[in-house]
Length: 304
Ligand SMILES: Cc1cc2nc3c(=O)[nH]c(=O)nc-3n(C[C@H](O)[C@H](O)[C@H](O)COP(=O)(O)OP(=O)(O)OC[C@H]3O[C@@H](n4cnc5c(N)ncnc54)[C@H](O)[C@@H]3O)c2cc1C
Image (cartoon, rainbow, N blue to C red; front, side, top):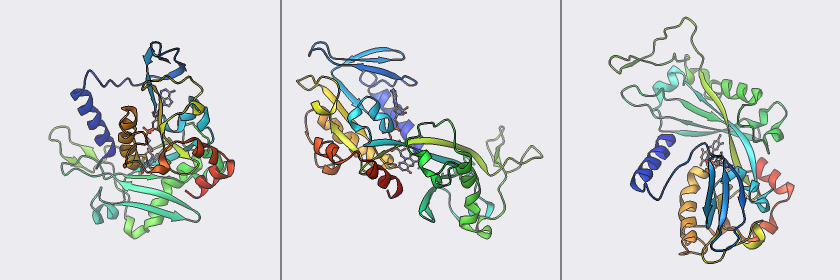
């Protein structure tokens, strides 16, 4: 399954089905949140596109959550992770059906992650390998990626590891010759592997960075913020603030059930999220007290 297509098609379905109840406002930054004054003067959210007033807020900003919820600082911290999209070698592509496997590749005390995009029979896609990790190779050391929110660049040493490691992990004969880029014949939609230029573009199509929200106890934090955990006033009668964040690199797995449990809490149907939510994920003042030490963050980072 292509995760991007999956998520986009869900949003398309939901915005079409519930046009009055669901609105997506992309490229909009929340600058600040004002405390509610009363039940009739709820939270005011100041954004780059204007103000919103609401009685309920859900913080779904993952690595950034502590910006508006300072009680979660040192409990959910950002980590920069790097990824690459690469053309598989000719032999690799011939031996394995694209999109059917994922790998964890261990090296020394670290691991990298790899999965392959599917390839459509009509030539869509090149069975690209999505290969990520390699923080331990960072120019200024692995620690430089912890607390790093700069997703505009990939560390050059990490990029060089990601770009070169795959044929080494799989072995030259399993990898085979480098593939040439795929070009679509605009006329008939067929694909071939000829290149119009004399200089072939390389194996790596793209490298980029993303920010992961790593939690001090390596599991997500989901639930309503008590009076002690938010700097803002609490409004009674169903209002308030909720959080679903700190997925620690596993949000594509956990976010679905966390979101549903959170919806039950917001609707007042399940105070603790119901059976779907493991109790370890619930935000409590006790959990906040137990976490936040530097050693815990380092342990979660070095030994997830
Ligand atoms: C390189 C990489 C590889 C990963 N691989 C996997 C994997 O294989 N499997 C898996 O399960 N998970 C993986 N993850 C983790 C997964 O991507 C996350 O857990 C998931 O995206 C979390 O979703 P989210 O919507 O909670 O947060 P995010 O996707 O992090 O989204 C949070 C959003 O909040 C926005 N935001 C923050 N502050 C503000 C503000 N003030 N105003 C407006 N918007 C704001 C941010 O811009 C961001 O778009 C990976 C993450 C990375 C970085």
